[in-house]
Length: 78
Image (cartoon, rainbow, N blue to C red):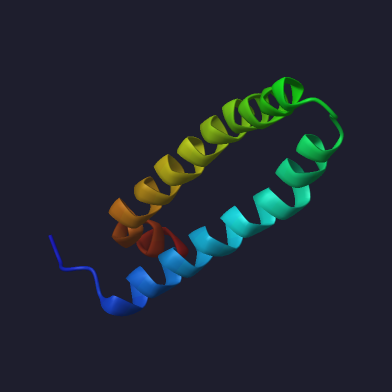
């Protein structure tokens, strides 16, 4: 298996950071701010994360499949 280049690590890390900031700013902050009590503030964050984590796992799995089978995919396109 080939070593992963620095450019790939930078791209993946940047994408992850941008996604995390966007999720926090656009989804989590308004959901938490909508509730007044401290106990009720935990519920939207946990439910949002429980909905978000399977989507992330599916995205990671599809990305890994694409990376592993990239030679076959480019062979189909040619």
